[in-house]
Image 1 (cartoon, rainbow, N blue to C red):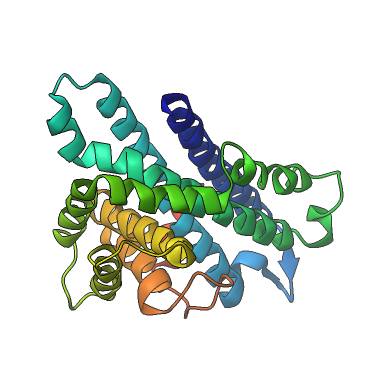
Image 2 (image 1 turned 135 degrees about the horizontal axis):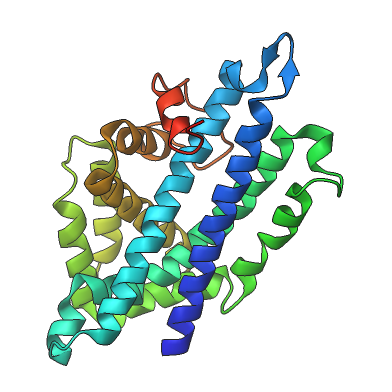
Length: 264
């Protein structure tokens, strides 16, 4: 299981890296390709798509780094076993890493496909790097446990160690209020985790998705500028994102967000 934990984290890290590489390729192309007398990136709808992917990519990168730190702390801490089990790092390792492997690896497939489409036909033919990224993206979802296995493992970890679930809720509760859109999502997660019986198997994917999005939002609130953290929450909580990219209205800080990925 220790080896599996490391390998699953590898899959999260690899998928976050694929997201970033695909996005940088799309940004490079969008800044140089012209259509209707404008560069692609100057068209509002294209800007909305790129901003949505940039926000999610940053969240995935931050999450993968925090999980790597948690895994290191969990394996090298000198604390007693009881203290380890009650720590946030332990909860992140046992509960969030499997959920993150499900969610981040799935989203990497969608982002690489969207970035390929930014290139148009040039992104589909083998002369570009995009087909390789597109082919590589599904591997991490399959490797070391498919999506369903990861989601089930996440809820079973809480069933075996309820203290881990309480620790996660405590952490998330310190970041959001009930007036936040993310806070309302947290209420849903709390209801799932505090029911007489932990989430049924049929709800495992919904649970894992909510958990990962909330942890990502919390980490962005800790480490990212407000325009990024608020943009992420707008995309995934307030505006019912998670579907096709570019469904939200154009973010007024879009250029600043994209500069974090392409500061040239």
